[in-house]
Image (cartoon, rainbow, N blue to C red):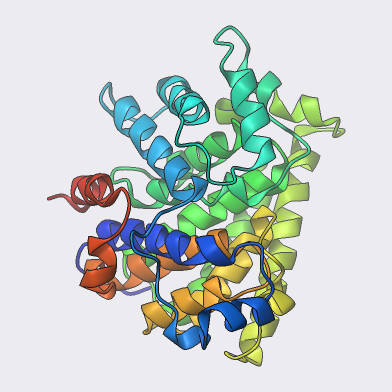
Length: 341
């Protein structure tokens, strides 16, 4: 892995995430033919003005606020993190701006989390591995001062508050790690190998009880270790499909045909990575490809944007796009905080 990173990778990742979200908002529930009929050639797609975002960016900012509050009292720990992040998720659920087609899992879990006396493990939807688990996790790949163990535990915990399926936890962990690697200067060509090695190591590590408590017992697996392994195995299978797609890349084909529609966490990771890795030096093209897909286009594009922005930095994005971006000022504020400015 290289040691030179792009300038302001946190700012680039957060802006890219939100821009991808905005570009994918109008196309989320359409097939590719309908998108092309409505938008014209996919390589010329432009975000609306204003560039409104979905629950993907809203929840990313909720996580960022929760992490900032947690960090004010010391190093990130489960006890410091769980309450402020939980509170921010509930505030998102209560917000009148929560009208951007939010996912059912998040709505159900956050309503349960609003009962402050309820252990969060009882609110977590252990049968859901929807992409809501990892569409929002990028802040944990960008937040400074986290070692791999703390980043992994925190990524899994933020997912588990709503999405308790082991694959949701593993995919969130991998997504945060991918953002972290790219922000630190990893080369795109080595990324899938690094993620695969990490997944194999984490599968051997087992269940992160310090961060997750007794969550596994709510899923009726025979052991905590089998619960965790189930998630890592599904993520490794998704990486297999990603590698196969990259061996015979077809930029003009719908990426969802190769790595899945992105409605579930491991597919959102794989298809977001595929869109980024098809165009590692062309961030705008990567976003356009991600938004012109037959699956969960806004979530795929927001992850592709986070990867591309972490890799290429803040200057990756057209200034005129950023100027019209909803939540621009808060995104820039968190970017400056985590870029050390």
